[in-house]
Length: 253
Ligand code: SAH
Image 1 (cartoon, rainbow, N blue to C red):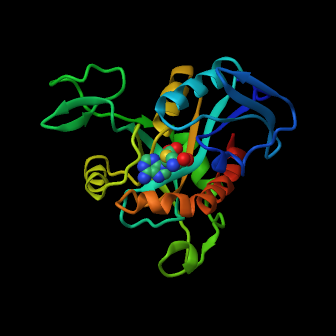
Image 2 (cartoon, protein in one colour; image 1 turned 135 degrees about the vertical axis):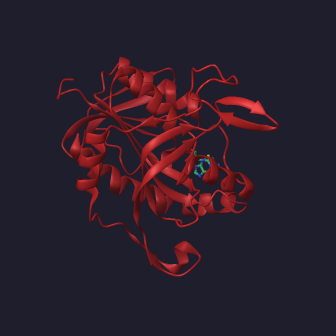
């Protein structure tokens, strides 16, 4: 892939994109979506707000890859925490992304399959898109020691603490998780650190086009009964922290 090709920078909602976007080099509207050309950390980039959910994310990612020839797709935004060891403000870099809502409904529950695979008994059930080894190694090196914002007690609602960075599994689906029972199931079934609504769709499209992907999510809530209250309260600070990590991450591309 040509080094001069732009990076595709995606976020789902304006609060997330605000901290990344640079609109200096013109805009184009396609499928009702506004694509802005600019630069990130000195690299040519196309910035776009996808809208919420997997289909919006997949549509936008496809346009970035096909129309703009983006050489990598990078998503920056917020997520609900799944791993109980993590708190609001912690940042997760996905090394594996799973679409938790593609699959078969069995005994009232979804058994996840890899998108496109027939979701039938006897068919291999090991869903997930994986970040390549080399990219992961480079990212871990580039992000080691990164300074994340310290979180005041007024921000966490608990004690003041330093946010931390984690690498691991993120699950994506077309539902806002506002449910402790689902949160526990997602931890058990997927070993997930976080849940959101777009990342694994971007990974599916990026993989189809043979382009690398990076998904960075800062926890805005903990996906439990309070998540609908925490999400709007912590969105601004979480979106900003995710952008700090995205800016450092794109330097490996
Ligand atoms: N009411 C909000 C809706 C946000 S949906 C609004 O009007 O903007 C939540 C967004 O943040 C999605 O894009 C998703 O990727 C991410 N997200 C944050 N917390 C989440 C959670 N608990 N479950 C699923 N997605 C979550």
